[in-house]
Amino acid sequence: MAVTLDQTIAQKQHTFLSRLFANQTFWVVIAVILACLFLSVATDSFATSKNLFNITRNVTFTAIVALGMTFVIITGGIDLSVGSVLCLSSMVLAVTMHAGYSIEVGILASIATALVVGAFNGVLIAYLGFPPFVVTLGMLSVARSLAMVASNNTVVFQFGPDHQKLLALGGGAWVFGIANPVLYMIILALITGFILRWTKFGRHIFAIGGNEHAATLTGVPVKQIKVAVYMISALSAGLAGIIQTGWLGAVTTNLGNGMELQVIAATVIGGANLAGGVGTALGAIVGAALIEVIRNSLGLLGINAFWQGTFIGGAIILAVLFDRIRNFRRSD
Amino acid sequence: MPVLELANISKHFGAIQAVNDVSFSLEAGEVVGLMGDNGAGKSTLVKMIAGNFRPSHGTIHLDGKELVMHKPADARQHGIEIVHQDLALCNNLTAAANVYLGRELRKGVGPFRILDYGAMYKRAGQLFAELKSETRPRDLVKQMSGGQRQAVAIARTMLSQAKIVLMDEPTAAISVRQVAEVLNLIRHLRDQGIAVVLISHRMPDVFDVADRVIVMRRGRKVADKKIASSSPEEVTGLITGAIEQVA
Image (cartoon, rainbow over all chains, first blue to last red; front, side, top):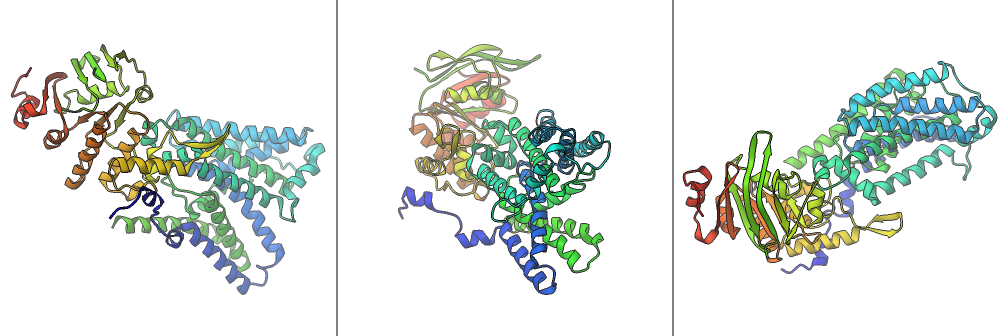
């Protein structure tokens, strides 16, 4: 039987449907929709425009950081410092603006801080061979402590001459009444998706997560890329911090406390593999949405808020369990 | 004219003499089996050709010009490719992505360039067809058989105009049917005028596919013979030291 070259090239392994059903992100989307439907019926307060507005805004902060985390997790790393970096960036922004500088200077200082922290993490991990877990765990403590030092552990709620601009940046709704944070999230998700699918850099990130040794042997600049992904992760935390500052109108030193767990959960639930090599931008967003819907529903269903941690932790374990089950089936 | 010529190559690590005064040459389209026991110096010798190590003494000439390499990328640039024993493949990527790993094709203008999936699938498909392999460019490497994985690793060496392909134990740890597949891949490389150095422990494979066999023992070259004028018994004797040396 003669098969032409073009036929062979065009041949895909799966049909569209079978690929969809094998896709974790797809099932999480279904779960989010089912949860929303259930909550709309079971409670009066879920499907109100105010609650939905709250949910979408809350999702964005986790989702934006999760987008950055996706890069790190695809390389097979982990960044535990994102919550603290978010806090530090917010505080740098707040303190700079409080001291009378313009919003541009504040944002620049804030982003620069995040990038420096990310570069520090990345260099230790890539060039000195530190385990990512250890470096970023240390940074989790360092960054929050620096935020306390910067603000003398006070709440900052006055942002100098550009106070109103900052509040508009985070709290406004400039396009079609969509809350600004949601807009930022969509833009950042599109950028992330583009980088992962269409750039050499994105391809190399997947290669490092798949087989770091192979990537090195084939001439992929593994070390530089690893530094870059930790900088991207810190940058996304910094951006989320800036937006959240504008939205909240105040910064405290416990901002983003424990956020790393939510972010990692969102990424993993959305289909990224903690062992590296797998992850998508859409997955990060959808994962963040599922977590937020669960959180929100606990309150609405009158379940004690203390259960929140159990549900989020349980969701991570469940997501990894699905991944294990798939692997078992494949290895049969 | 030989494509590769090694003259009086030695390599020592401290007091240990890993390779001692080895000379040989390689013609285009020739398959040479490099045999020897563990620690005989095969890997060290190949790593010098691949640019991982610099020789302590001696010279390497490629197409008559002396070659001084500092890193593996230098060797690759000169058309010397290596297929690593572990193949260096990423399981989570497609066959085409693995073939192009580290030298992805892109399209676009200036700094705005995106991956050219179409061109990479197409060229990878052509390479697999040239190798007479049933590997499909869009398939993930993790779903492939050992022979298909070898085809991906070998296709990688054919991307640029390779003159020499070094293969480190390509037939270790794969099934009998796949060994036949890999030996065919080696013949296809040879037919395209590429010189192949096959490092192997497996006597039948070397006698099946190689034109010449070089035997090393304790860092020295103890034999360099046409396959036709040698026998597995003789080579075994040379490897173990039962036969001291042949001209």
